Amino acid sequence: LLLTNKLSIMAFFHKRRQAALFSAVTALRSSSGAGREMGSAVGALGMMSSSMSHHAGDSASFISAPMTSLSHFSQNHPHPRQPAARMRAASHYLTTTRRHLSSSSNDGENDETTITLPNKTGDRNGLIRHELIADDGHPLRVYSRTPRHTSKNTDDTTTNMDLITTGNVNKEHQQRSILLLHGRTWSSQPVFDLRTSDDDAKQQSTLQSLADLGFNVYALDFRGFGETVRDYDGETGNGGYTTPRRCVADVKCAIDWITKRHPQADDGEDNLDNTYPGFEDPTVLNTKPALFGWSQGALVAQMYAQQYGPSTLSDLILFGSIFDPKVIYPRKPLYDPSGRLVSGLGSDAFKPPAPEVANTDISSLEDFTLPGTICDEAALTFSSLALAVDTIKAEWDELHEFNSCNPALVHIPTMVMVGAQDPYVSWEAQRELFDRLGTEDKAFNILPGCDHAAHILKARKMFVRGVAGFLLRKDGF
Image 1 (cartoon, rainbow, N blue to C red):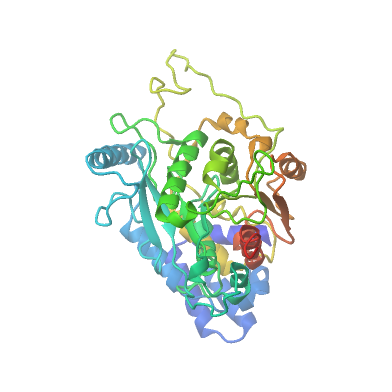
Image 2: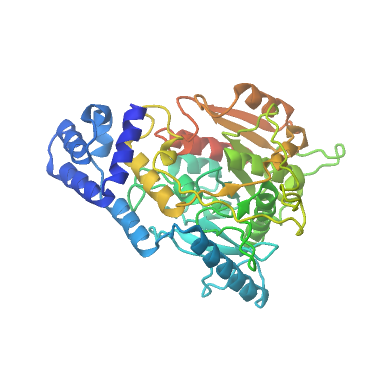
């Protein structure tokens, strides 16, 4: 079924995307009966109806709005494929942007009237875009959403745990903030804000779901991902790579900005007690921001927690972490064959322009490995959105910096979260990650029937409740 779906998606995208999609949607709307609906759509796309009929019920409600919007994205925000042209444009963009930022007041976020980062996907039904300025002047994209339910509970005894079941936001308890970090290949919009309808009726957006539960939730695009442009040198056009330590520094910028944006997160009582040095009262709710990392983003989150954890964070969630102490990332040679310094720290190292390789339709679906865990509508929408915002692969470099990941150096409350059938993690490594954490306030959450992308599968509500439950476990003491 997976192979059939992937081959079908390839055919779909390479044979006049919009014409095929229009035919499919027309067939779905004009047909009657679940089996005939799916069969007609499959026929219009040139797919095998037998491979898709299982999801007929979910796909019968397929609507054209999300895909039509994505077509609008690509028409209005073309992505030039010529590497030289892209590098010149990026170099000019960063030079202009950094010149502007250096001459303006830097309060962590640009003036609302100043547009410096691209908007690749339009409004997307109220997606809020923030532009932060990193310590080196590079602009960073952060996303958020506002809660849809704002009714206030009248019972004074109600706590944030009730939000998990009632869906009502109690503004008096909106103290918890969380920053989400995406993985190796795809940026925050497809990963954390997937939606197959304008109102997100199926609660597929992690951003929206957590916001509805009362959290101040944000998602960061690393450099080279989504709407945060590559890190080119503004004068030479060289570079353009994404590195772990640079990501950690950018996360620090985002966490500082969130703390400043929500001052109640830093004015509470210190949860240290005089019982003995370093004792943390387990009944006191820490309202500093929490940090969530998925896949390779979990390694970045862990590195950040090791360096800045207790002073800036309340909690850490490592979801689908690819941590493995047996994997040692090799260092690159310092010099190229000509004797020129091309690696290492410092401005003296010359880094040639990062290669520009297009992401593919197949790669946009590789995280979905279990038949029946995601409907075809959601998979297609994820693929289209991912390719709209991440047309060119981000190029990671200096991966040996991940070798510094050491669970024993994490001293804040941590939850290790993983799909029970995640093919990209080592279970031995997951157990070692949990066992070696340098905190006794920790949890291990296994999501049954899920693979690497549990947060956007049919079991996503179980994922959201797991995150919310861990962050609110101390609420109500």
